[in-house]
Length: 122
Image (cartoon, rainbow, N blue to C red; front, side, top):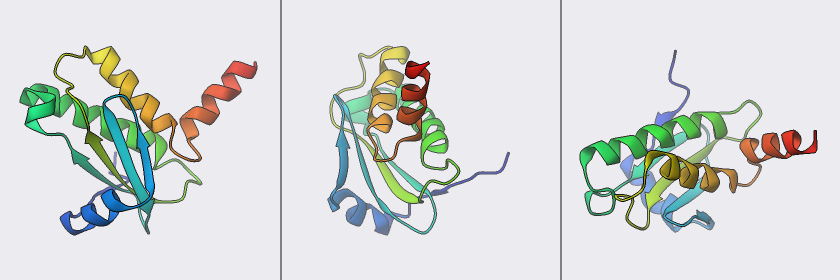
């Protein structure tokens, strides 16, 4: 399967992080801005995530949600930075994924949130 997004280059982080587009969850923040193609950046520090295994889990789950959400058909492309804001070390996998998903669902025009609302109406 071909990769449908690119990594956010280092010089784009400051503009994305300081922009007005921001969603804060309990332990995760998403920063975004419009771009020409979907690009993902990850800021998951060793101090907040703990082990390399935990950091890689957060990155893997973030990439999967980004492909579902930001690379969805008809979605305007965006630069997105996923940033840990509080300790993730003591969360189990399910809780961690729930926190990430909740943050992604709060993005404007969220495909996941619209899908859930459609299922709830049935």
